[in-house]
Image 1 (cartoon, rainbow, N blue to C red):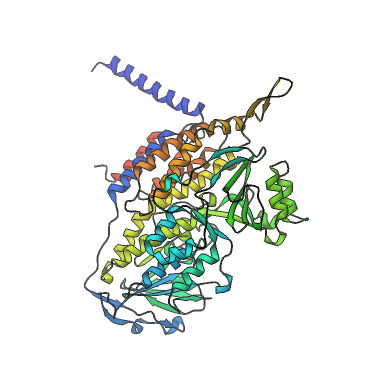
Image 2: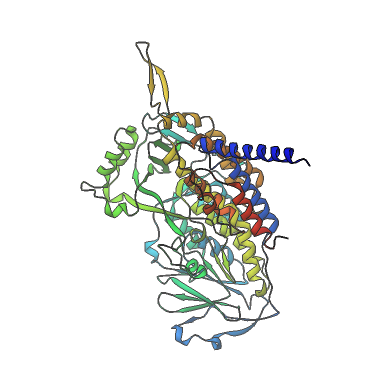
Length: 588
């Protein structure tokens, strides 16, 4: 009540507040535990808010999957009045844009249901399907096993297990093991992770589908929802129009369905997909490794780049070299002596195994591609249209979860569509699918980007102190990054255990997020951020964890702009104001 005491209290509060900001600044910790706490609060808010939806009337105007020759002869007269009820005589017409693994999983499962009629439209010719290996994590294999036991049996006869082998990180320079990660213990009673040829996996699913379900060589380029909200018209490159009850956009990172849904370009500026800052070289070869059959997955770390070698079975290895390069370097950067020699020079001084693998790979079998990803988004559906796989959650390849998350999408989508009894329910079921998948997939996106940023920007050859023959002490790589890499060594096994438990245990997607696993991830991940804060660009790490996308998922808060308002100190009041404005818009 006394002015003096009130003034003293205000001064004390002000000093405490500024001291806190000063401490954060000195520690270079603009991305810190506070952000973690805010992210967790946002997730809790998101779970409590959920999604709203509307239902439609009892009557329904729909279509059989009809194909018109041109857009000109497509009109409402081509539609057949139908009862809203779905039956064998009046099946649900599902159009799937894209013929990747996610769409094939959906098509295979829905075709079993006699009340479904499925049409898959793929851009490329059947003979030009993507080649190369795909890693199926335990979460993806658990989904496949539950959805179709015969498909699972065919896959296990072709897959090379890596979950029961030694896997981990090695020093790229010294070839010593830095940290091993256990892929077996987090599995519980689900299958071990494995690797197989992508074309083999696609062929297994393709052979299980009824003839004519998949049509190659004519991509969906846009869609229209009928003016009364019922039925979808998918428009293809050739000008044909395919009529259906719902449309699934599984057409990859440069998705035409996403472009139409969000009214943005398919690619380039404004498309939502941006260059990650990283390019990757990869190759496949027959290689007689000294640890063949014992080691599944090796990640060699070093300054500003890393190299991965994976046993894919039958004496073959797949490798990739991951490094920070400007966009378009595959075209603009000269390699007069070929890509193999170029990579040998880049990895000069690294472990002999790396140089040997690159030298042994045929030049024409070495590829390069720039890596793109996108921030998590809440826009997964538009009426009776939904996105799936890379079209909605493109992610970095660091955790090999791109295909796995598409398979999880497929599992949830099939569950929701199989529960539809009336066409009036399609929109709400697609929204439920999105609600079940949006947060978990966003976290996996963030973890994948986090892994890339940490390894490229944070890791170096670990610092080492050793005694040489003459008794003197030798300090090796005792620079800041080397010391930080050494400090992380005892933490990483704990983080890997939590990370793979999170990835492998949540495949059913029965809840938006396993908060127990997420909290442990955030706490241990926060410790890694703390250690790396002096050498890794904070904004990259923040984006890498995917928190920015998660925080804005349902509240549309531009968190990124809040954190960029000051070069020195961020102001928590800006964040609080943003949350209050969105949660209590009328300031009631």
